[in-house]
Length: 266
Image (cartoon, rainbow, N blue to C red; front, side):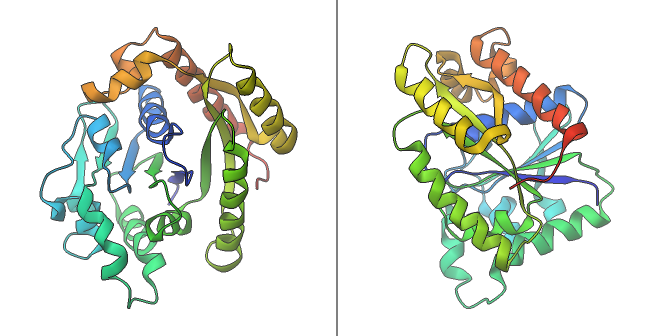
């Protein structure tokens, strides 16, 4: 299994997590990489942001795969974008935590199903990108258990670094008990406003503390970035020349360049 499974994670909402999943997936797929997005957020924003419905029968979503109704293979859908497939989500997924309360191995459900599919799969993916919910819930733990590495979008606003400290503690706990090989691939600064002193202050603090873990590319605040999901497409396709797109194209290149320089992480 050569697939690289990457979770995009931050327990805070509204930090550009889903936007990053959608546009990194689009950027990689345009570089002829075969991508599977797994929407693990019951809000289903990655689903609608890639042009699919988050109100369909839940047995055909990631929930159907996790509760045993369907196999992974049966819930993978093509998007209208080349090289880019998705396992969709909807609000029913939020019931999984209660439904699996008696299952001592529930943190491993996604790992068992996904790795079995990828190991036996004729449909080869270069990357699997998981959009995590904005909480440190069972769904997030499932994602952390199955992932090789993590990408953390960090909003350049007040309190952003405090939230990151809590996330780092969770990641360390998961490494000790459930997934010792988990690495932080990088931290991506989002919603950057160069007119705002606070943005550059948060950037400096993040770079001082996390050093090379912080990507050089920063994602600016950009109207087109927030418009694109309502049209069911990545901003890279919606308006490829806007500042948000240019940043995500640059980020995709930086992400790909890591492949040749990946050292130890986390």
